View 1: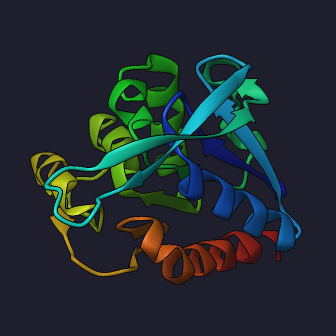
View 2 (view 1 turned 180 degrees about the horizontal axis):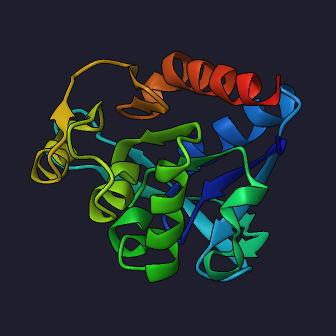
Amino acid sequence: MSQRVLIVVGDATETLDTFYPYYRLQEAGLEPVVAGPEARSYRTVLHEQPQGWDITREWEGYSIRADVAFRDVRTADFAGIFFSGGRAPEYLRYDEDLLRLTREFFAADAPIATVCHGVEIPARAGCLAGRRLTTVAKCRHDLECAGAVYVDAPCVEDRNLVSGRTYHDHGHYVGPWIRRLAATRA
């Protein structure tokens, strides 16, 4: 089984949502491969809801380079996939190549992780009906419209799918997802 794991990004991908699993995969002896609409550099963002604010504030984060464009991804070459949060999923969910490969990863029962707004991609791909998962509370509607069951917890595991709410939950859900990936190598 492949040791390569796909990380989905686009402009305005959340910084911690992307880099935390990227480096954890390396620590586990896996190879993170970054994919975007094109193989180029993308800007990440940092999100925080400042005290007294009703909405999230955004700052520019680090850049990350996509190794491969979605259209060139062969799911058979990867052990699993990670859907990062941030604002990127709002527009990435309309990319037909990304929707195709998302459906292929779900059909293959590959280890899949999603955090925050990342759920918007598998929701749009029609992969979440009957599944239990979590996300940032403001995306609960997206899950329920896709036929999923929203659970407010730092880590929700449903068969091959592992999810977290926001970057605050990385220490809870990334480890279980990596253990699933490691089990595919055994």
